[in-house]
Image (cartoon, rainbow, N blue to C red):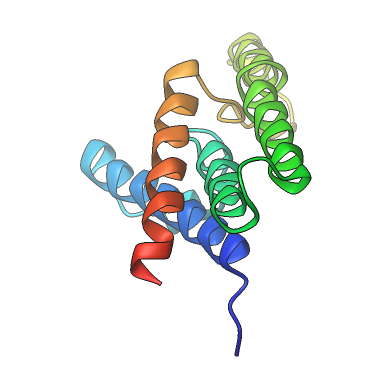
Length: 140
């Protein structure tokens, strides 16, 4: 069976980022919450680690000057920009709305406040993606 290295490197980077969030949650909040594995937001950015690992392995396999690498870099930049821009704003709006409705009796569930990422969370995700991407050919 032939591996799709870019795909599996991206999945591995996502998995490492999500497990890191799970471990951090256990340490900080003293509780094990498996839902964190499938939640967005938090440290490090799994969005960043996923797309950067994908782009890195594509660059290694297809060449740094290839059109596919260029496409994957633009895709990664858009995803990371969106994570710190639009998605972070949505999280802040959710926090404001949740704070506003505290104490008011209503049936609306709380909104998810952990949607976007800070620039630092995206940067750490980028570093994780680079590490997975460059180590992938060495390991596999």
